[in-house]
Amino acid sequence: MAKKGNLDLAPSRREKKGIGQYILGFFLLLYTLFCALPVVLVFIAAFSDEQSINKNGFSFTPEKWSMAGMNAVLRYGSQLARSYAVTIGITVTGTLLGLLIMSMFAYSISRPDFRLSKFLSIYLLIPMLFNGGQLAGYIVFTSYYGLKDSFALLILPLMVTTMNVIILRTYIVNSIPSELMEAAKIDGAGEYRTFFQITLPLLKPSLAAVGFMMATAYWNDWQNALMYITSDNKKPLQLLLVNIQKSIEFLLNNNNVPAAARAAMGGGIPQYSATMATVIVVIGPIMVVYPFFQKYFIKGLTVGSVKG
Amino acid sequence: MKDFLNNTWKHRAHVVMALPVFLVLFFIMYVPMAGLVMAFKNYDFTLGIWKSPWCGIDNFKFLIASKKIFINMTKNTVMYYVIFTAIGTFLNVVLAIAIDQFVFKKTAKVMQTIMIIPVFISYAAVQFIVYAFISTDTGILNHTFNMGIRFYTRKELWPTILTIVKMWNSVGYGSVLYMSVLAGIDTALYEAAEIDGANKWQQIWHITLPSLIPMITVMLLLSVGNIMRSDTGLFYQVTRNSGQLYDTTQVIDSYVLNAIFKNSNFGFTAATSFFQSVVGLLLMLFANGMVRKIEPENALF
Image 1 (cartoon, one colour):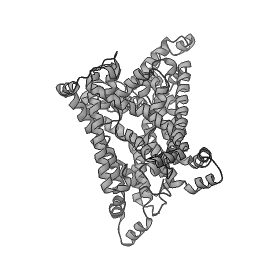
Image 2 (cartoon, rainbow over the protein chains, first blue to last red):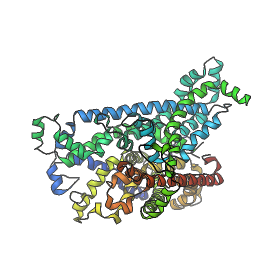
Image 3 (tube, chains in turn green, brown):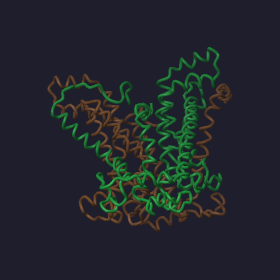
Image 4 (cartoon, rainbow over the protein chains, first blue to last red):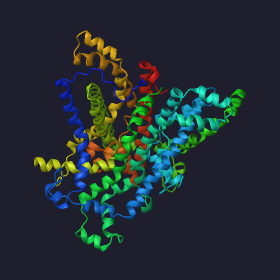
C-alpha cells in the first residue's frame, strides 16, 4: 500500500504561486499556531510571576516575568535528579533490549523454510486480538509475580508490541535482500554472526523509527508507574507530574531545601509557575531530540504501518 | 513429524533468537489472559485468582443489576470512538491534502514538524496545559472573555473539550500516513488533468481523494477492533479524574483503572473487562474479515 521512494513530501509539481497558495498558507499557519501556542504557553507561564498569574490568569503576555518557578523546580534537587535517572534508565534499557529481542524474533520468523515460524507468527498476533485487560494484568503481576514496586513493571509491559515486530519483519522481508544472508552463510558465518553483522546493521533505519517510538512511550508512561511504583527513589518523571501537588508540598517540607532558598521564595512555592516549569523539565528532552528522528519515524511509520 | 523436528533442529539458532520475545509475551500478555476467569469467580485477595471460589455468572448479574454505570461507560467509550474517528479521519485527510498542495515545501516541512509535536506530550503534562486554558480562576478563556465558566463542573462541555484536545494531540501525526500515499501518486495524472482543463478542486476531487480511499478504508476497519479501548490518559488525566464529570467522561478503561486504585468492586470490574476483551476480539475478527474482502494484502491475518 504505502509506496516507497520519497515519503515525506512530494516533489513540487505545480510551481504556480498564486493567491490561492497564500490563502492555503494562511490556514496552515493558523493550524500550526493552534498546535504550537499551548506549548509556548507552558514556557511563558513557567517564567511568569506568580502574582501576575493569580491576578490576571495565565497569559501569553504576563505583567511580570520571574525565575521563581524554575528555581523552585530545580530545588527539587535530589528527587528531580533521581526521577530523571529513573526515566532515562528505563527508557534506555527498555528501548535497547526491546529492539534487540524484537529484531531477533522478526529475523527468525522471516527465515524461509523455518517451519516453526508459522506458529510463532500466530503466537505474536494473538495478543493484538485478545488480552486480559488492566485488572487481570495488575493482579497477575503484583500477586503472582510479586513484582510490586519494581522497575521490571516499568520496563517489561512496554517492551514487546506486535505492531513493532511486524514493522521490523516487513523491513527485513522487503528491504534486506536474502541473498546477502545466504552469501554470508556460504562464506562460513554462523547464524548468530549473520544476524549481528549483516542483518542488524542493515536494519538501522527501521530500528531508529521503532526505537524512537518506543523511547517516547517509555518516557511518557505514567500509568504503569502510577499503578505499581510506591517508593520515592523509583519514581519516574511522569509520576512527579501526576503527583505535582504532593511533590510541591513535599518540596516545601523537605529538609533538603535550604532555609535561605525558602525565604527567597517568599515562604510559598510559586505553585502555577512551578508546575509549568516541571512540565518543561519533563517534556523538554523529547522536544529537543524529536526533530532529529523525524525523518526516520515518518519512514518507519509509512513502510510498516500496514502489513507488507 | 520427523521432518518437522529435523527442520526445527536445523533452525535451532532461530528458535533461540525467538525465545526472549516468546517469553516476554508469555508472561506479560498470555498469563493475564487466563486471569480473565476472574469474571466467573468470587475474587478473594487472600486466595488469589485460581483458588477463589467459582460463582458462575453472578458477576454478570451484578453488571446487569447496576446497569446504569455499565451502560454509561460503554456508551461513552463507543461515543468517543465514533467522534474521534469521524472527525479525526476527516481532519487527517484535509491536512494531508493541504500540506501536499502547498508549494512552499520548506515552510510546509517546518509546519509539519510543529504539528506533530503534541503527540509526544504525555497526557500527564497535557492536563496542565488544558488547565491553563480553562481553569475557573486563572484560565485564559475565562480571563480573556470574562465568562466565569466553571469548566471542571460542567459535564456537558467535556465531549467538546476532549475532542479538541484529542485532535490537537493526534491530527498532525495522523496525517503523515495519508501524505505518504499522496506522495506516491503519479504526477502525470495531474499533468494530464491540467491539460484537459481541470481546475485544482476538480483535480483534488477526481484524483487525490480516490487515491486515498483504500488507505482510509483500511485504517477505519482496523480501528474498529479498538472500539472498546480508549486513550486512558485523555479520560483519566485531562479530566483530572473528576467524579462530577463521569457521566460524560467515564470510559471502560478509566473505570477499570479507578477500580484498581480503589481496590474495590473487583467482581464487577472483572466482568466488565471480560466483556471488553471478548467484544474487542469479535470486532477485530469482523474488521479483519472485511479488510480481507476489500484489500486482501492489507489484512492482518
